[in-house]
Length: 290
Image (tube, rainbow, N blue to C red; front, top):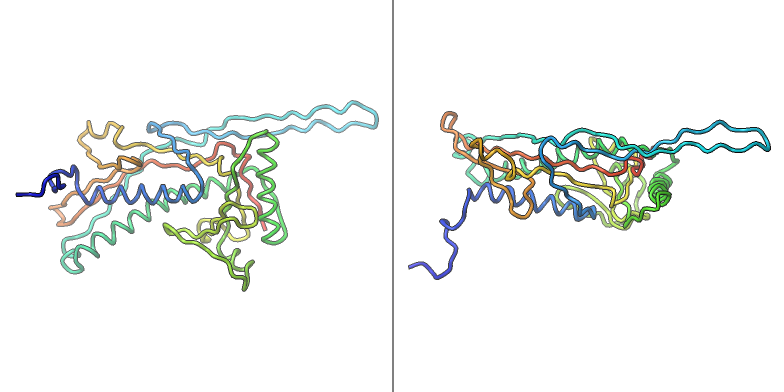
């Protein structure tokens, strides 16, 4: 007779491997957002248009001595930057690989690599978006670039009378260590990301490889400016179409489905997600060139 109130395998709905995958992805994603200080994740329907606010100014002509100075025309526009869509991925491990290397290596290790690759895919898009920030400038040296990027962000939001809780920065990891030289500083690493906290006025400064942030580039924005959007796979019409995906109850940002592929003798995992990190104000992102 089983122990009273013990949880049996029959009490767990869904495939344990699917549950483990979506739970770990959700936990790691939320951990990354916590490092940034971002708390704003907004659920959207597939195909929802995403917008950012863009500032502009048209300078009036200068005037001669003693003449009335005309006002320059300033404006804030709402600009569409695309739509949030479902992205589809799959990976498969053959039965022969499972036999040769064992389940732990052939399946669990590749599941972890799959999760990391999907999270990196989302962040790569975010870094590309950050590079379109409309506050730009040039500085001499790393310290100057970090200071000016930070100052430009604070000035931009201060001019609009918008309060911010802090500034997050992104720079190339080679530039960072070149600047540090032999100085000792604690660099933290979590979820595959290197960062330092409370560094030269930044609440957090991410140190990125060259494929994400180019050398001689510093990007900064207000923590409050970053917004995350996601599609909940469980709230879509996929189930009606016979497409069943497991999602995490706490962070339903990714769906996973595992099945045996008898035709090719393998274990296949499908994953769908629709996650976008964006910003509310494009002119609240500063891109400083060293």
